[in-house]
Image (cartoon, rainbow, N blue to C red; front, side, top):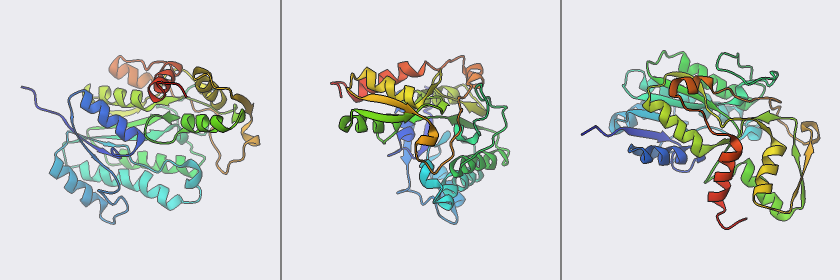
Length: 293
C-alpha cells in the first residue's frame, strides 16, 4: 500500500487559491492541513522557528505557500505589510525547509514584469516590477532562490479568479446588477486564470517532481474589458461594457500594460497544456451561478 502524501497549505482556509489547492490535493488522495493567519502569526519575529515547528509536527511532503498580500492598490499605502507577507514570509518558510525534506511550492505573479514586451513573458525574461506589490513578490522569489533549496517550485500566475473571495469577475458582475453600463480598461492585457485550474496543475507539477521556476495560467490572452464582456455575455446580463484606457480609470498603481505569461516550462515538465481562459471562465460561472445570475 502506497504511503499517503501529506500537504501543508498556508492560506488554505479562507484564501481563494489556498482553498482550491486543498480541494485539488484531496481529490488526488493527499492528506491536507490548511493553516492561515489565525494559526500562525505571519508577522512574528521568529517566524522561521514557528514554521519549522509546524512542519516538524505535521510532517508534510510538500508545503504550499498560498498566503500573501494581494491588494495591489492598498500595497502602495502599506509597503511594510506587503513586504512582510510577500517577501519575509516566503524567506522564513524557505529557511525552515532548508534542512527538511518537504518540497516548497510558492506562488508569485505577472506583476514582477514591467509590461513593455509585446509577446508572452517566459521564465527567462528579466523581471522589472513597477509597483510595490510586484516588487515585494519579486523579492519573495529572490529570497527563496538565494537559499539553494533542493526541492522547490516558484509558480507565477496572473489575473486569478475563483470561489470564496472577491475577484475581478465577481466584482464586475456585482456592479452589473446595479448599472446598465460600466467602464472597463482595455489597454492592459494579461492571462485570466481560474484558481481551480491553477490548483490542479500545481498538483500535477508536484507529483511529477517539477523543480524550479514555472508560469501557470490559462491559455490565451485578454484585456480587462474582454474578460468582463465574456462573463456578462455568458450570463446574458443586460449590462454594456464600455472600453476605456487605463489613464481614464483612476488608479494609484502603475500596472503592466502587457503581462501575458508563457507556460512552456510547465508544459515541457508535465506534457499538460492549460485549457483556454474562456472555457475555464464558463465553468466557473456555471458552477458559481447554476441558476443564472
